[in-house]
Image (cartoon, rainbow, N blue to C red):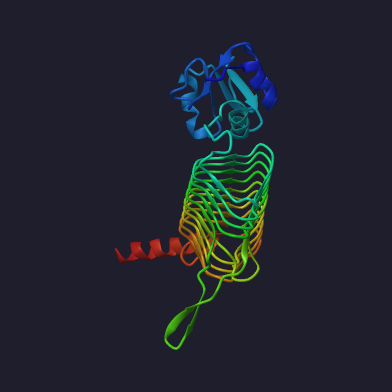
Length: 326
């Protein structure tokens, strides 16, 4: 278990602290269960009542929070500060350290420096893997794929042929990248498969949650933009283009050829029909059905999805009608 002084923590996050900088912190915990040798944080004012009772040795709080306690570390953004602290000292998950003798690596594959490959992983012909990449057990990387530097690929991920993955990407267990898109031509009373001959391209700093599937393009590319974070169990269809720094929450589904702008945030279980244009900075509430193009900066919700204000107006009208009938 690591031990780091509060002073080091304060310096990392540029905090304000009046207590004992030499006190050691060995872990991070929620306010209600934190112990004197542990760090906690308050980022949501909903949990402010827990602040007075916590036994934490140090607590990250917003700079403008009223009150005084020698254990408080005042920072601009406690949530971002705790992320930096966890990454720096408290996030040491076990991982493969070398290339397993039980892995299967094609002679034509090219591996960079400091690459680790777990048991029973398969790296196909002409695959290119960058530096400092960790590939866990049971991963399959098919021929011609390219993996950038500093990526982590967790167990049982399948990366189909020709996939392009950028630097510093994290791909969680059970993800499938580059499987065939859902394309069929109906002729003569039968559905005939359209070969999907495109690829998937994932840009830098993308994280993809467990069980997510990203289909290869029919022609061209399916693209996930730089810095986008995808939750578990998301389905992304062929030729979809997701912009930079988007957030896609669990069970979102995006049908083929729809394009999302940058900084789009989509809450859980929302769906998009195909061939849509979704603008930059759009926000989509949970369980919405998006059936039409959406302009920049819009906030939508409902099924079919409507602007927040229109949805609220209709909901109020329905409630008013129900009261009249009763």
